[in-house]
Image (cartoon, rainbow, N blue to C red; front, side, top):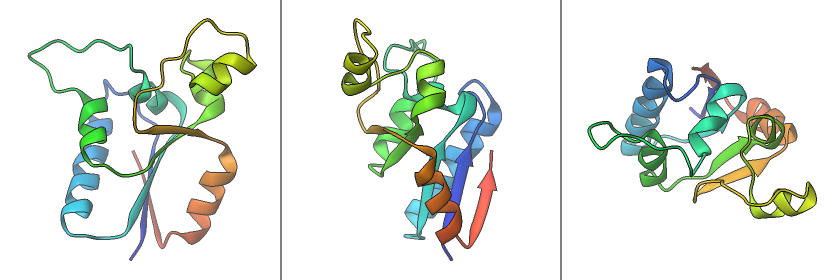
Length: 122
């Protein structure tokens, strides 16, 4: 059964960590799943977000899964997160999208919803 994890909770939310936990479990069992970061969840893709040494880093935990990590481009830009291409397009001085994350349009979410047998939102 294919699963879509629609993650909308900010990285500081326990729900964001539950999403990661489910993704790790599905990945460990080789179950088919996809993720999509939307709304406040896009903040996880900010490479400039500092995390204290005594706390787990949600961004790097997602990166360790080595899966595709699509992020809504509009939600990201609205929260100050951009890749090099969009930084140039919008005349921004720098980019800060974390490695492994991809900025994509909502069409990708629509495709993921259509092809998933189960959708779980965090």
